[in-house]
Amino acid sequence: MSQHTGTANHRPQMSMILYNVGALLTVAAWGVSFVSTKVLLEHGLQPTEVYVYRTLLAYLLILLVCHGRMVSNSVRDELLFVACGMCGGSLYFIAENTALEHTLVSNVSLIVTLAPLITTLLVGVLYKSERPSRGMVAGSLVAFLGVGLVIFNSSFVLAVKPLGDLLALAAAVSWAVYSLVLRKLSAFYTVLFITRKTFFYGLLTALPFLFTEPEHGNLKVFSDTAVWVNFIFLGVFCSMLAFLIWAWAVKGIGAVKANNYLYVQPIITLVASAVFLGEQVTWIGYLGCGLILFGVVLADRLSQGHPSKPAH
Image 1 (cartoon, rainbow, N blue to C red):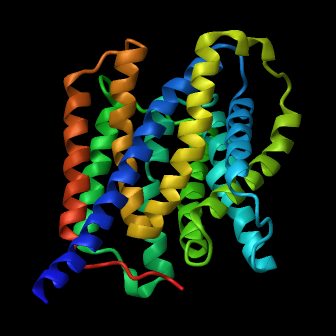
Image 2: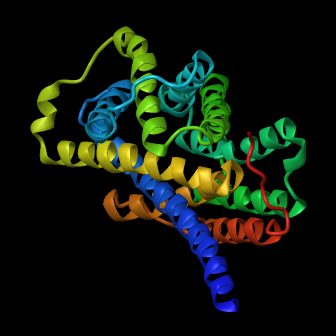
């Protein structure tokens, strides 16, 4: 009897570990994606083009394995999928990339990483039974302090340029809304179906931005090895596989806990930038990395007594 009970208890624990590892791997891929995107932009591709091309590749690949059902259960759900495509796709990436043209990269990175805190706040407002614990809030604040150190790295200069900063804030809010919509849809649809619909509506809602761009990159750049290697990495790993794993992880551990792993993203970006772009890492950057990891662990440990209940 006790042996069966032990096995039964072991399975949920292993599932929780896998969900957390999945969220961490996804964030790692997204952290490296900043370097890959920079390579493509330096070769002449425009921000919206990079998003559209990588998402189109991911959509075609996922369509090969998920094509049996094309429509959701209701018009309401279809509109939620449109919201997913916009908030987790077109609006998020285009707002973030456009913000980089109007303000400092440090500003954009810092503001976008507000997404976990915004998600926690929105969950607390929308679901009274899931108000974040003090431990979750404390851990998030510690991690956010670490994010600030990583982003500023060797300088604490913060130049405020309203348009760029507002676009970055819009991207953070957009991702938080995506996480909450994803949470609702996860109760009724498979991860494959959700991801395919998100890519489709992300592409669809990005087309107006693509057509209104004043200039476009030359597609001949794809003959360059650096371009197509980074493009495949973005399309296959950072879009298709990462979004599949992320949707699965959110379904398993909830939007708030999954989004807390986004604090680790600057660490990955910091290391990848140092390795591939030769950017220097100072002691401030290393201190920030430590605070981010400590904050994520703190939030997870102190909130274990406050499990999230799935919304229906």
